[in-house]
Length: 479
Ligand code: 4AD
Ligand code: MG
Image 1 (spheres, rainbow, N blue to C red):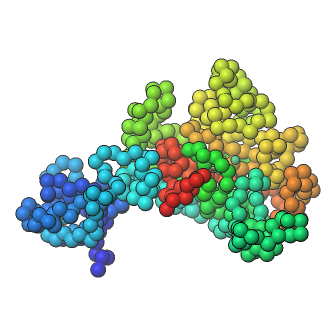
Image 2 (cartoon, helix red, strand yellow):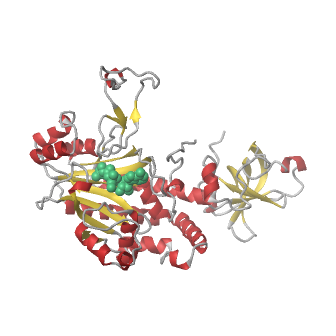
């Protein structure tokens, strides 16, 4: 029976009174045939187990290796050693699973690199760095639900398999059961998806937004939080082919309401993690300091991780229009010295280097940019009266660039239909979407927060592959 065991985190906070306890976990280190550092994932702090010298034979002790799993029963006593308040004086040590040190890929002695740990992602949870990251990821997910629950939003589970491409960017993964080698064909030679599983061409969703809008037209406020898939061939430290997105959708909201909610949301999430994961954040902050020592002074962050998070919680985001953003870039020393790789002019889809200049060099804080040119944005965004821009917003943050994309939606049927036709979006197929504009349409808005980008911001990690358990990127889908 296992259920009398106590987790390490709880034991470390318990007053030692020689009470008998049972703990289970994995060996981090074993020193002097006497001191075991045991970890069970509940915290980065290990529990020290003291094995009385001479009470076990040598062959048994040889099996207590890094990575082996143990069940230990003993007395919880005050520790005489420094570094911990309590320890367990073992009366019985049982090896649940041995771990051959010759073969175990995770030797903690020489600090393994993040790149190496990605290759053994099935084991990296057992390191302090990934322990902290994934406990923060859990907390952040929980905080997301709490935020919306406190505000009366309905959590809508939007479908993973869809027949539409919400963003209209054509970067979807096909879902099909047709045989690849010999698919049924129409007379003109094109593949006949009528014969496919769903009787039509389908793909993995790129966004739950369109279905979210349907929900908002009844519940007023909904959100979806789930995996989304993009077959964009971007092999960067900020793109995944499978990532998680939080997408709220609110009826009776305009762009400003939308920006207000997004800003409040981000600040809330950061505060939640600062209040609930202090220990893990402090560990990650220290990790970042160490990592930045390897970089030239000019590339190091001006603030420590915790300082940065506090700054964001306590300061309003900057708000500017796209036109102003382009103006700032054109006036910048970086532009004048031709430091940007990509061109700058009104109408461009800002590149990450531009976004990062705005937040890191110019404003030095998160920035909400609104009013993008309509030609670079999706069909569903509400058209502004100037005929050139749409009621879009992106939130840019230091170290990352775009973290949120959102907009007020085009609620006027005629304008929406015209725009869809212009952009070759199949109007007939989207009859259900257009129905919301036919039957009681209302001004509404929403946004999408990239969950892993938020994780990067909160943990100070720099590669998106390190904040999702099993990253899917071009040419990589191991585990
Ligand atoms: O800007 P995007 O494409 O917006 C949408 O999908 C809208 N339907 C959202 C909405 O209004 N409901 O994506 C939203 C966010 C981006 O700001 C970014 O943080 C993240 O999703 N994102 C990615 N994260 C990781 N890997 C990728 N390939 C990403 N693509 C977008
Ligand atoms: Mg975007």
